[in-house]
Image (cartoon, rainbow, N blue to C red; front, side, top):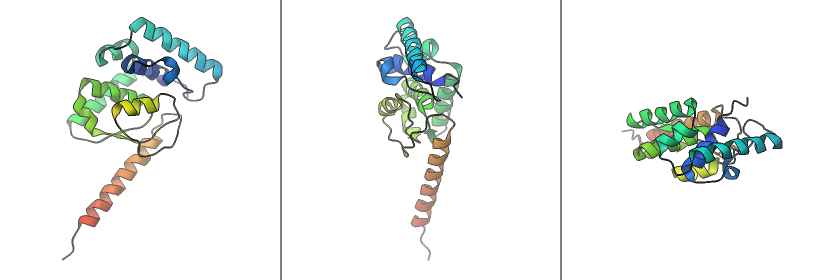
Length: 168
């Protein structure tokens, strides 16, 4: 695919987590070494321009993109409604990090669906305080991890409900 969302997510993660581009820039949808070097240089320039230690809203405005803003808003809306938010890959986890930075109570709604292969994903999951249900090491953010994790959650709730049932 290669739409650039992991590059944007890496820049935003640097701005929020005070980490270096080398810690969070990865292969994305399958970049080669030269492309990863270019991504790292783009992220480094963006962070040098915007700065580190930004509040979440300013970091989103300076380093994020519209897709991450929409995802952060979706996390906030779902959390406010009391829904569970299954976070899939690196970009969605960074959007959730923005949401939690804006509204810390949103963290209690998060479930990490999977740990991806993207370099910075583990750092973001740690910052969110979540442990992924699956360790699939998927690279593209197509939502497969979230779908599988949501299925696990549904099946777990069904088992709990049936185990708690007392037939008289």
